Image 1 (cartoon, rainbow over the protein chains, first blue to last red):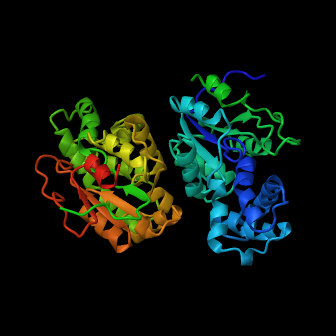
Image 2: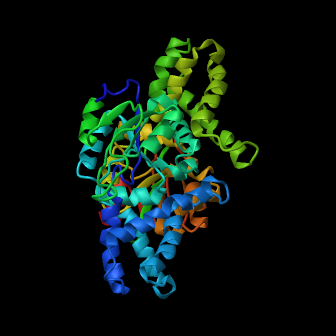
Image 3: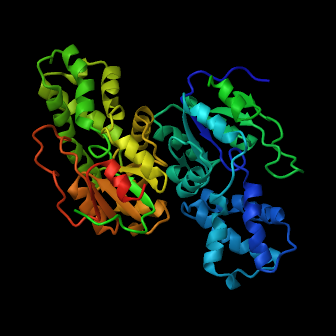
Length: 243
Length: 243
């Protein structure tokens, strides 16, 4: 399907939500008891996760457009939570703030896909590995500590002060690493993220995650660009990179 | 000498140069063959390390004062290297840039004190651990990967865009961690660093490193403030924090 990994790659940086971890199942798991407690026992927790996530890109667009200064994702998630609850018949003003704060941390408690930790552990032996996520530092840090994700450093939107797919998110990450863009490879399950990275000169690796959006997923089922690597999972990815 | 560790500390952040790693021996080790190669075989490599390091604070002062925008330490080290070489009879213009670049990476190749890795590994089981160094991200990252320092994330000057002891370096680090300052404890071998952190509301832990500056060290041999913890080394520190 693809040739060997490109030579000269020194750092692998990873999209995280969907690529490394299963956000939909994790958010649904934590939302289920919350919804039941607040009178929405009949609601589908996965539909709630989807609805919360649908507000993710529009919230970041406010920052990308410059209408709003860089605001970390934990804050955007918290605002979006208050916006989505009424759609499920819950008035956020009647929920104790501590409960909303705790549900917001569901994004810190996501489980990795079964191959993620093993693949990253192998890749780490020969490459620098770091998230290049729109998630903020403490979100990534809590997630990594709980799940055992062995990152060398936590990079991404908060370090770059820019949200993907803005070029600054990729270019500043390479700059922080003191590397040329072509020494950095983005690993992602999303074709649009890879396309933006490629336009900045980064190398690209696609790993399909066909159930990220549940059983009816229709997008990102296959590579839709000329990516440097296409791997079945993170173990296959590790093999491509010689580990 | 001191009571048990303060309760409520969730993250331990570390000064690195001198506290976690032995910069003087490491820089001297890498400088020795360089000096010999360029006609300064009689020079004392440790004196060269000291001379290079003496230009560290003045270079950061340019940034602290606002006369210069945030500039990462790798760049300041490289500039300082060119300034210090003439004191040892070497004209930097006559040295290939690649050799200067490589010597500059001596700061990425420093060895930890004998107790550092074991202590950090124990502390990591119950706390978030991260550098809060004036060193930039890739410097800390390369050092950690080579030495096996098991950081959860790499924080510090480049994330905060401010050099210690400016208050922003400590306060933005707590903010990135989404913690109150008193949930964060700075570990350092330098009383002035701890004093600045304490003024910002952080907890403080002193670990003496009596040979950081060589056998004739006269400063920072003992605690000079009301620090929350005074530990003999990182193993003692780990014991104080219950690990």
